[in-house]
Image (tube, rainbow, N blue to C red; front, side):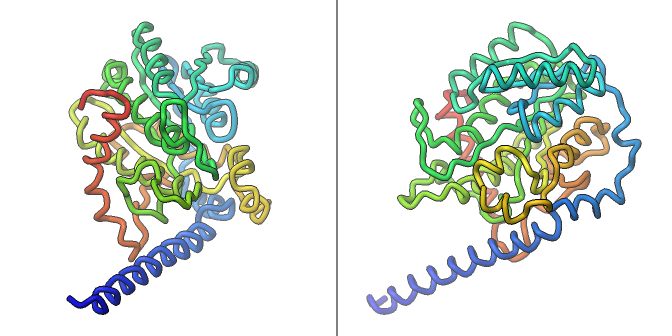
Length: 338
């Protein structure tokens, strides 16, 4: 192959990648505007069954990360209203205590507890798991809600990129560490991971910490959320005989403190069109209340229904084959056994 021919091939490949990325972004934006806004929720809610949300779950132990505001808070409040024993996992002690007090007051449920943990720290997550191991209580629900979108590259004290750590490595470490306690709650145990429609814009990649010099926080967030969906698939397959259900979900575009901080222009442009935190949390609570035989293991849910994991013509489906390699990397980073 001549240097000219090689150059043409490289240029065509670059053009094809550019077109594919542009298509993913455009398709995601259009699909999102039609479905992920408040208007989408109101339209989809016409098929909701009120009886699906009437179950009471006293005696169920539920751990919710990032529970002091936004979707995490709305989820914690919703489960506490239904009688669950709820553990709020929060980074900030003061904000966590305020959320705890408010939930106890509004629901009348005193079985709400605070666990302070920085989910950007693997060592703190392991310490949290150890504290729960000492309690030796069954964990009926682990809700991996905490997430972050930092637009600038930040490296944690343990040497990992911050978005990746909070969105992927942290939930992975916590879930794997909680498996013995989840098994105690079998066959009704479940792990629900709050992903994002942003994952539609990215295929799976093994470049977990975004090695490119021109760091883009939004793209890294999108990649992280794709990993969460693929991980959920793998967990469902790997632990199918342990009596634990694994599900991921998308809350839609909700007006939360996190969105306002990380995506201020997006938040401003769609002001009045975004979902409330309660609308964003609706499917999380729905997944927590349904009988497991009504749910699809490893599925991705949106507005109380199974949703596609890939947009048409986005060339992302085959990328999920990389998940075994990614899990190997996560085990190494977190010093977990395979």
